[in-house]
Image (tube, rainbow, N blue to C red):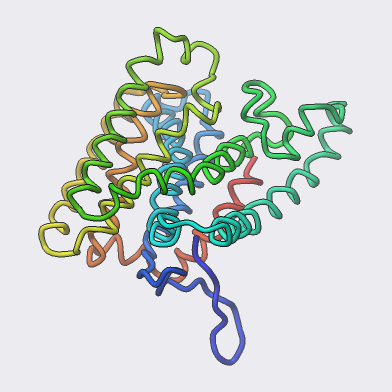
Length: 322
């Protein structure tokens, strides 16, 4: 989501936080927050047992929020970066978008798969079958559980992201009438929010919550991504001012209060409606809140070079953390 530049005189190449390929100012804090999202996922996979107080275990469990943050953030960043280009698409623009996404994500994804494969074969006797081929082509999430978690478990979310990338040019093209003003962008956000709520209402009667389908099945995570696209459009079309800064502070406060509340509830949310109600909407509040409060001390800290470097490393960390 950000690119690197090498400082004069050589040395380490730090990510640039200045402008996007479309000329928009980069939002450094949204790169820094990626590290904490990945770290939260690590916590959720290492919940302490024994006599550990339940509230501490709940704190670790709520690291599940990290994956949803990634999905919402992906929609936000892609809209912020590419809306101006892909709202009026050409074959070349779409091709360049897909090439950029592939080059950004797949090489490391493939490297980690090839790294874990020998161990799985030797240790567990795992065969090279359709499950492995599903991981190779990044479609394992479509097979649902347990195939989605075979080989390299965290990579299921990358499979979901591939689905998002495939649809993004089409969604941004269809949504182009909603990208022309702040008022219309808010309408887009309202539609996305309604879709999140509707999916939550339908989850139980349809049976999406019973077998983990809602956790990994790409179409059932699309609302997270589209919500991110909608708030990305809101931010893109809004003019930063004191009013938006106040709104940003309110959104961050709401996110913090809600996060403390779900930790206190000591309940895990592994599927719809949990992901949507407990994670997706608060994730949108967190991301838009950070974008609207560039002068906040926390936001400035997340945009420092060390945090941006960690944010850039978060994808690799996430893929190998198990």
